[in-house]
View 1 (cartoon, rainbow, N blue to C red):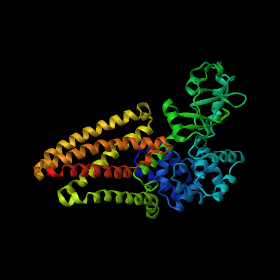
View 2: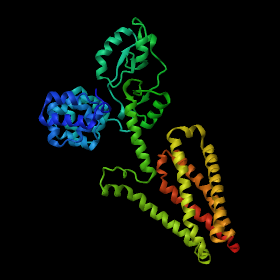
View 3: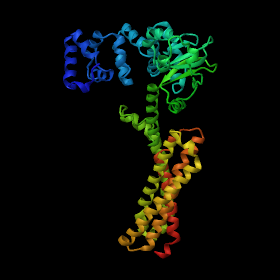
View 4: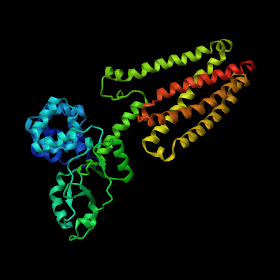
Length: 453
C-alpha cells in the first residue's frame, strides 16, 4: 500500500485521474487500489458525476465500500442515487453491519427499505435488529461481525478456523467463548492464543473475569468502561447474558467526537448550529432560542442597573467600571464552568467530589480577586485620582470573582444531579447570571460607601 508521504502527492493523484479519464482499467486499479482508503477518499471527492460513474465501472461494490464509509453523510446520500441496484447490494453487503445501520438510520423509510430489500436476507435481518435499538445505546452502536469459539476447542483448531473467519470479523484481537446457550463465559486475546501450546484447550487459557455492556447502556457509559479497562473492543450482551455484538474502539472514538461536538454546541448555546454544512437559516433557527432567552436575561441586567439609577446620577464615574465588573464576572464563571464540565465528562470529578471542586474554585476566585484588586488599587488612583473609588471597585471585583467561580462550578453539578447534560449550563447562561451578580455586589458596595467618594 502506497503512502502519499513516499511519493509526490500531486503527480500520483494526476496519474490516477488520467487513468480514470482514459478508462484504463488496469492502470487505474493498480494505482488506486494500492492507496490507503483515506488517500482514495481525497481523490474521490474531487470527481464530478461523470468521472464517478467511470470509477464505479472500474471498481466493484466490494472495493468501493472502504471509500464509501469514509464519506460525509450528505455525500453518501448523493452517491447511493448514482448506483445500480446490484452495485448497491455489493456495497452494503460488504460494509460492516454497524456502519450500515448508522447510515440507514439517517434515511427516510422508503430509501431505507429499498436498500434493506437489496441485501441478502440474513444480513437484512441483522441490520433490522440493530436499527431496533436507540441510536445512542450499545445496541445501536454494536457490530455483529465477531468471532466466537467453544471452550472445548484446541488452540490449533481455533487458529486454523481463524484464517477463514478473520476477513469478515470487525476485530480479531478478542475471541469470545460461548456455552451451549450462547452465553458469554470467557474471552481469549489473540496474544494468548498465539503464545499458547497448540494442544491446549481454550478452557485453560480463557479469561473468565468478563467485562461487558448491555444493549441498553448509554454510549457515554460504554466509552467510560472501554477507557477504564483500556479495551480495543467490548462485548455487548442481552439481559440474559447472551452475546449479541461487540463495540470496537474506533467506533467509540467516532461517537465521542460527536459527543464533544454536541457538548461544544451546548456550551456556546448553539446546539446543532455550529455545523458549517447547514444553511444560514438552519443555523439561525437552532441558535435563536438561546439568543432570545438571553435577551430576557438582559432585561434583568438592565433592571439591576435601573434600580441603582440614583447612585449613577449622583456619581456618574461608577458607570465607567460596569463593563469591567460584568466582563470579569462572566469570564471567571465560564472558566470554572469549562473546568467542571470537563471533569464530569472525564470522570475525574467523581473522584474528588463537590466540596473539593467548590473549595478549589473558591480558592481560585479569591486569588484572582486579590490579584486583580491589587492592580485596581494601584491603577485607579493614578487615572481617576480617587483611592476610595479604587477600594469600592477592587472590593467589588474581589467578591464578584469569588462568587462567580463558585457559580460556574456548582451549576453544572446541579444539572448533572438532575440527570441532565452538564454542557447545557452554557457559557452565555453562566456569563449573564454572573453579570447580574456582579452588578448587585458592585452597586451595593458603591451606594454603601458613596459618602466617601
